[in-house]
Amino acid sequence: MLITREVDYALRVLRILSEEKSMTVSEISEVEMIPQQFAYKTIRKLRKAGFVEVTRGAKGGCRLGIDLEEKSLYDLITVMEASRWINACMQEGYRCERSATCKGGCKIHPNLMNIQRQLDDQLKSCSLAMIIS
Image (cartoon, rainbow, N blue to C red; front, side, top):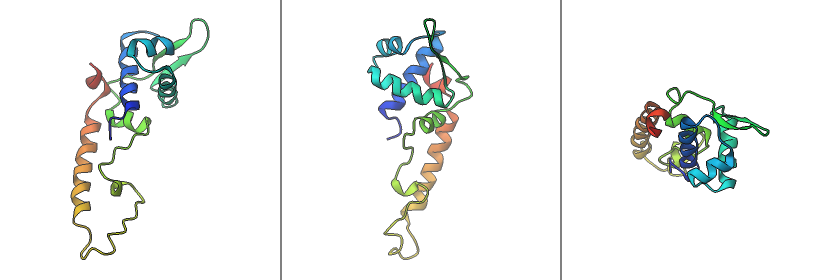
């Protein structure tokens, strides 16, 4: 599935941070109804990718670290390590046991690859600003 729970949480975090200057993880968790353990995990991944900046201390908190117009839904799915593949055989390095037995090669794979390319292009064309606004 492309939009996993974690990608959904990441979208919610980015949405609330686009509306507020800075928030703590606890505040984000409460406002966006994200279990706190998942909020921390999500923000950790977003921070590592530069999507979110985190400041520690009494006046600390999380704030947006990117321009949401410049990042796509494809970028977010990649950052959150969600599978974007419509079938396992789309993944690089996948070894299909059936391909050796198919005369003339697999007829399904090229068609699925075409759909995968179209899907990737569509995900890349959707800015995060467009998705969350």
